[in-house]
Image (cartoon, rainbow, N blue to C red; front, side, top):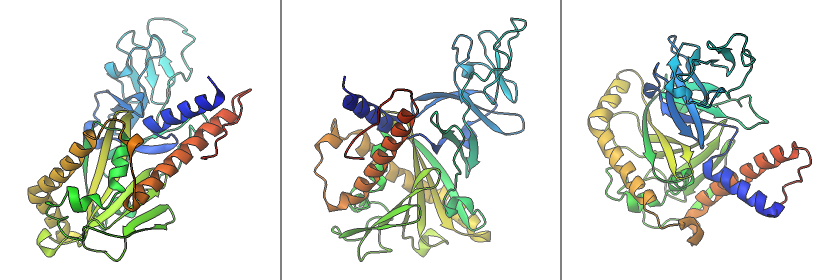
Length: 354
């Protein structure tokens, strides 16, 4: 196998399972309890649990002794004990005790990978770093998730049987709303044709319909600020309650090459009694309608033709998703090049497409 083939395979594998050195939402907060839970994210097996003080911990789901799943073990607060032989591993990944053996050489050694954790607006985030970037990068989420005094955000989570990149493509395509969601309560308006444009922002770019704003799903923003996220707004009338336009912030977390977790925060700018009214209206009326829209997206994405991206004929409306794809590929290549450069005797990763 040539060096070029090895590079291409490594690149495709990294793209398929998710870029490293980012924060990803992995579970809704309510799903993380004091009972250890085993999950797969970015193709990695992880155990997560909540200590009695409420703090969330995450480790590689592997006992360093014989490889049993730590998620099958016992929560001891700031550590977890393997069910197989009782080996105790701290939340930092250090073996704290091997009860079956005196003076075991494993004790005191960091033998299990630790995943830094954050909780933001009802979701648990983990940082997935490569061997050169184990310390987490700063994470700054959009204002709509960080400023709870001004915005009310409601999280919904769905698991889709498709690669995460297809979920990104879907959001980065504003034109699909006019067709796929034409019978939606909020996306039935707007032109069936549109000229599209793109403009750069401090954290990424905005892809939008020209000369149409405040009508339908008219624009989408791609951003990176320690995590990769997308943001869009859909016009809402007064009949939908206070708060003006209805906004969505989306993040996707790869499970493996064939499954993704989609996290969507639905937000509006509301305070005081308007916040209570908006939440009431959402739970009693709008949430069901929004799930119907997500179900349409799921059905399309899970039933695309086999190897659909290899047989595409893209046109102007696809410039936004094409730009997002190039960003992912470029960053994946940079990550692999950086790791390869630190391996003794490894040659550079050369490619004109970088």
